[in-house]
Amino acid sequence: MRKVGLMIILLLMAVAPALAIGEEKETTEKLEYSFYIDPLAGPEKAEFEMILQNLGDTVLSFEFPTSQKYEITVVDGSKQKVYQYSEGKSFTQAFETVTLKPQEKMKWVEVWDYSAEGKRLPEGEYSVTAQLRATSVNGKTVSDKKLITDTKIMYIPGENPVFKNITSEGGKGIYKVMGEVRPINGKFYFTVEDGHNQLIAETGVISGAKYPQWKPFTLEVSIPENKLPQNGSVILNLYERSKDGEIIHTYPVLLERFNPNN
Image (cartoon, rainbow, N blue to C red; front, side):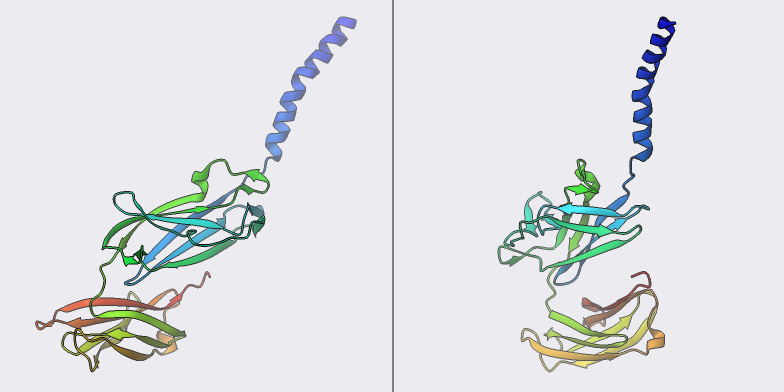
């Protein structure tokens, strides 16, 4: 009997760790999330949109050691760094937390003017890398940095010789576009479209200035609300025409984005 009792005790001792491991696996929380960057290259600046999304059914808390939530680095074709978001900035040295409900997302946007050491970078392809600076999620250390790092290729356009310092304001079909212009023949044009339909046909504008003299201009744009897209972007295209009538020196201007999911 003693031998039987001893064997039962030994068997239970051998099985207990396996049961404990199985129980731990069952209670281990599955963390599902994504982090990515979308670089949007405009004529004079780039917008970096970074999205952190909770893809699972559990509330996620991302812990950061400082107020810096991400790092952005841009390198040229020779792998030389030309831009780093954190350079010249100061951040609060205190732990911060970002909490996302299931399926919830958070977006950050940064703007860069293509300059490095006070000069505009040449036209070409550049590599943009964003990394979330979170050190842990729900108290668990982020050991694999690949999960919070994303790299995209961005093409920086050449500097436009006719349009510069272009800005826009307004919404819901009423917009104002401002900037400086120096068309070769003293006249430039614009159209407005949403990627599928032309909302405003080609319209000519007499600038009162000719190359190389810069002159400020303002455009008032009005689009009926029933023509605005439910999902998409409204783009104003600035350009001039060559002596042969060819469209040259195009400059797209984002007036407004429409996204029912945001």
